Image 1 (spheres, rainbow over the protein chains, first blue to last red):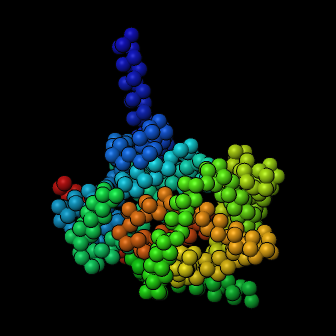
Image 2 (image 1 turned 180 degrees about the horizontal axis):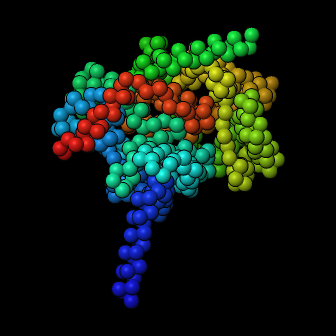
Length: 200
Length: 251
């Protein structure tokens, strides 16, 4: 009996994995649904328990994100001039910033569902845009993802909220900080921002 | 004559596109000094009056009543959206929005309830700034307006018509009009309480963050959420190189 259940479970897991490998839009749908279901069933998250939200994002979302590429694009041409140490710190601080943004958005989740729009991609494409819409009581919210295929898995490397790509959104702020204080200036600014937010 | 105009417009657009590509890092913001001044004024006005009033409003007025107010103004704006859909040559969307307004006016007691949403009729907002964009007018320089906040030259022109619709249509009574405008302002601000808190936390430079977000979002809205890619600038091309290089770099 137990063995059978275990077999069924591992089959389901394997199927899930294969599914995720083949279709980027299916991956987005699966991750979105998981996150929304978790938030809906968790009163602590709804009332803004940041620690819990960060755990949720880290376990459910981050494994599907190429955060290095995201950071590199936002930093732009200065990325390749940065030392590996600086790159790591940029990545860590930027990640904290983004996860917090996401956490803030998640506290607003109530009756929403995520709907996929038709995928315009060829079978051989290694970079695709998955377009979704979050539907709830208010206006539908546009939420799109850029994904790249690395090996056999798809990874998110940019997110579009209401028509604004996250990486583009940060690019000019980052350039401004690097312009005045160099890469270290940007790291300091990000660290300061993240620390200030922890206090509030 | 018409063709001549169109060509001029195309040239103007190409120019704007070229400028945008050349200065990928800095948005079209020649009046930044002035804009930052107005932005600071708006921030203070918001902190001193708008935000406290909106916060009190959400605490004192029950949710059902607030939803009624929001629905009422939304239904009203939906009428304007329908007209703008029509002006943009989208008769189907115009008819759908028109149906939405009629449904809410009839079955939603003058728009206080929103049965149209429950019936699966979606709201697709359009304003006159978007209509101008659809007709080929470039956004022009970024402008921060007192009280209204982020805008562009084109959207400011659009806003004057949006407001003419908003204030002129309902009533000619000046007192009622002002009362409604104030209520609408509070309603909108209350709806944004969550969003502005997030912006406060994640922006490095709030002015730049809102400016870039506004300009990009408006461009996206003109293309109904699916804008063509901007021509790649030198900066973005050079972005590609470090990405591949960094993949091989030791962690």
